[in-house]
Length: 235
Image (cartoon, one colour):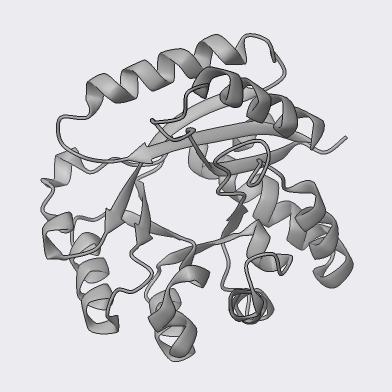
């Protein structure tokens, strides 16, 4: 049986009238799909701890029904303008036991601003895992910029839906190029519900096995994300 790791799963929208029920169904879907470790992420922002604690409490209550699942939580930095990098170094939230930041970008961010902000974050001494670069328009249009970021040590986490072509042809082409060039660190579902965007990775895992081999798929969907969470020795 697979024991996939999903490093980026999102809590149901705060305005959803049945958040707890949706969350429980998401966990059930992940379990059926062969996912055994899930990391739920929320946006990093000052003064958000009360809300995050409430979400984590609800998550852990739901997870009691699925003892085979390992549940982790993390904060994600969303970069849209320069003010989003105005965190004190000690306040920057890292993933699991690592010194790596989980970062996502406004899809319409300018290339020069993107580069400036990521380099500013690197000055903190933290690593950067860039989530869903396949959704960022300037990276889609400038593959050389994506290559440059990779060469500078920025890690890429692409969306499973982009690998499968579910997010459109442009994102599929970008993801395929990054995979062929071995510039992808991990793949996540970026799930947000159980119906339209569920935590599903098994189909992506099988596609990668057919195209690149089982060792490649294992690294991106099991070993690499577990290593960031500090759980690689439990495989």
